[in-house]
Amino acid sequence: MKNKIIISLFTVFIFLGCKTQITTIKQKNIRKTSLQDHAIQAVLWQQNASEYKALTYQAYNLAQLRLDQILANNNSQKPIAIVTDIDETLLDNSPYSGKQIELDENYTSERWAEWVAQKKANAIPGALAFFNYAKSKNVAVFYISNRSAEQTKETIENLKLKGFPFADETHVLLKTNSSEKGTRRSIVNQTHEIVLLLGDNLSDFSSIFENSTTTKRNKNTDSLKTFFGKKYIVLPNPMYGDWETKGVLEGNYNWTNSQKDSIRRKKITSY
Image (cartoon, rainbow, N blue to C red; front, side):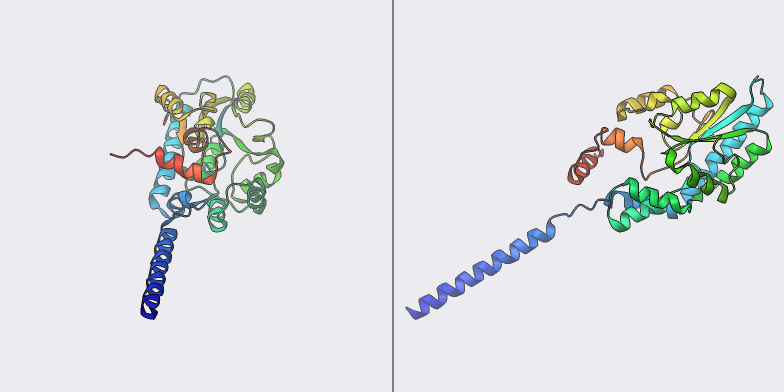
């Protein structure tokens, strides 16, 4: 009888031990979704890949080539101008994205304001030389950005610190009530002929890209294919943009982190 009890207890201990081990293995296999896991490769690429620099140099070399062609055939009755975005077009904000990864947090206006206030964003390779070249040819530059108008002072100071021309309140048009840029482009168009637009987001070029699904964005891009490299100069930005927030994530800012992860994975094409 005593031996039977000992054997029974031993069996129970073995069973519980195995069950605990299996549970532990299962727990270890549960994937913890980090808020910024999806962004690590993109930030690494922008900060480290020579290919990124090559693409930005390529974009600005093309912009200068186009500007020279435009100036050689200019018949405009108005002074000509270039309209450009700021973030990831001529200022590199990847350290802000790096901070998001370090702290594992999503975008917050407070953290972004903290970064902007430091005025430490560096010039994108090729940007400074191009815009100063434009100035040397008497071409005005207007900066249309969706940074908050409350950040005008810091933004102008950052541009000045890096040596960008026309860094003043007349030429820096930031967001007030709406993120739509068409209205601000229209203001510039009243006094100047806009001959080139530069940006990293398609809404930097045309209002038809505002609040669009991925399907619509692709369709509109195809319809404007002759403008790219001619009037529209696109800079690479793998870190963020309407392509994800309004395209992949369908304009819904209320998805949980787990839902975002699931949506991203479902929209990857495999074979």
